[in-house]
Image (cartoon, rainbow, N blue to C red; front, side, top):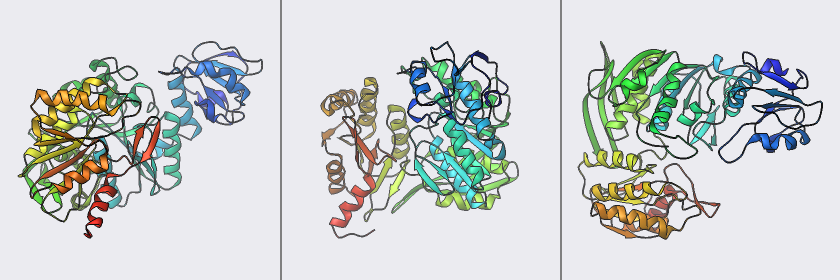
Length: 489
């Protein structure tokens, strides 16, 4: 394709060279191929313009820039106002605008994105629609799962994945759309049929993310100026703000009426190895009964969003009900099988907001003690640790402080912050640095009706220590614990 082909519709200027034919596109100087166009993108830690010379040496035939660069004669240098926007357009054109051949559903919000995508994918697959997925845990194309690096990949990766989905016969795609993905143009050229808003909380406000809450919200709102149909959580306090300026159709869902799709007859359920909810999702004269193996009000909310979107995509209500009855989401309120009348749960919550949500939910279920096994992430906002400690101390009978992903920090320093937070709420705690030992200690001391929450790792299968990722899966720790006791689940 020519440079003019991949930048079609954008304003650009040739600083040097001609409208050359290029053989690929790249934004990472380590992945340059001969004859490609290299997009020089300013980043938080590095600026792609600084690698322009290296890109040419590696074989780049064209450079897409926002400021002049010094390169040899014969190289096409094209200036655009925003290289990330240009990369999005170029990627879509290079891969043949694959999202236009799919029914794409994007979901944004502080919490619930991952759960929603897995629920909706399960429903669409049950309805016979081959469906791809792009999200925090993994990407799924044609049944093949690949671990993800970012919630929303760079635009080039998104378009490549959607091309693979189309080639594999997918008709639908569901994807998590992060605020950074929206703010950094990663989904600018994705054709969204539906956009979904789950909720909004004070998160991702930090250097390299968002300068303030207003910026965070504004990035989220961009999805609803891109999609055709919007489905919004009317229970969320920021719902009126999120629909302000939306150009899509607006449909609402809510646990608390009024809304287009509402939850009625909500019942909490707890049995051996099961924690969940039952409810009726009602819209006008149509009712979908849901038995969901996910606990709490927020799970009802996620399921309502799925019901609303599935209806819009023409899925039979019975199919929706049957699919939601069996859906499981790795690391998101994931209930593990146990041989006794206590509950063991894996939950990805790694900040105070998420911890409060899950812990408030668990207090609504009849239980003995609530025990939390958790730590704090290294190289992350220190204030987050104090707040996590305070919330855990408020809701839990016992907190077992242990290792999460300490990264480059000392676990002593991390736990010291959490312990100060625990003191704010008079929380009781012990410390067992080895996470496997901490989990086993909790299981050794479990009593009937206890709820043991393994918090922070979720879907992750590693621990990051001093720049090295060591394999670690909480599910295997729990399973090995029972096997050593001669118990097969």
